[in-house]
Length: 119
Length: 340
Image: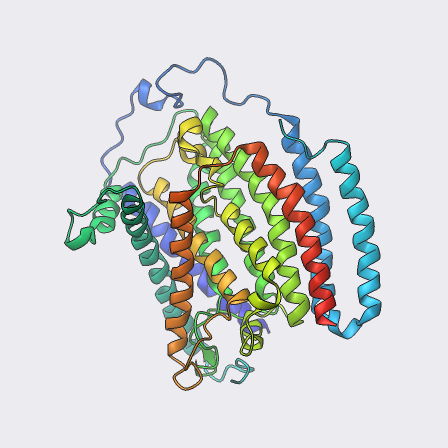
């Protein structure tokens, strides 16, 4: 029902308001900014930074994100199936078994190729 | 008990006003819960470690959260020079709003208690129900990764990367564990799932799903033993290292509100939500039972932190990808056999 999303929008607006007030109050109430070179430096346990913090990071993070995308889409596909599952009966059961079977094959392949390995 | 409202009988201004009041009440309750959870956590951890914990500000240190809060309001609103300024400001706000939003669809009391056809103990009951919770909590990842990136500093960036990889990995296990419940209930609406547990809690039907959700949720809210994003011994404070004052507090609020939401979701899906003894005679008792169950989980999470050492990152990823996901498939299989 559409009115439910009206409730949600109002709630989110109030949440946004509270967040805004809290963050803004800090700006108003806090002392005037007194920057100094040492204070503005990126924190590295008291040592001046040696290199730019925007370094390359490991490819594993990309890999995990990609595998996540595939699985998350599958799960998004399973949700509507789950809602009407009891109407579908055994037909729905076998269909999902085939669907998940293909997915699990891919999962086992990714596992065997070492895509899930972290050292 | 009957199903929640079908039509709103109030005039437009009526339900808008009522929703604003309800939203304010819920948000203030969440913020108070946050404040006192920090107190409870410090007191309990102290007890576990045979210390006293904060006990100077007010009786039993009960005014400590208030003192902390006031202090944070009067801190310098500081920003590192190299930070990406708009994103640096936006990240804590995103975290906090996402955390607040996820709680909106939780029924924290009997939903057939209405005023003008608007349920009093739930903000909104869209058809998407539990899916909305998953969507809103996933938005929290943006707060973390933007915060870590915008700081332009090494520790926050590493913390943010770890955190997002952890969140998305456990998201899968959590999502799959929840599907098991949906297969049984045939609906995504949380009040209906609660109603269906009037006889038997889902915990006893799908114990595996319950375990998966508890482990997954612990990782999703970055609690020990899965608190790698802010493992202070190696990453200082993780993604919020460069933050101070209320901006830092916003991340903290988000973390604890997410904890409350996670406890509420587990309660609603597996422990019968607000249902409990005598709730049919005295409906208002539902609020009490809901509070008791959520509180038990909060205590459990604090207990975990005091008991278990942090896992290594490869152990964390192995647990998520190689154990929880296969188990979640087993859980779904069992659930679909039961449902037929």
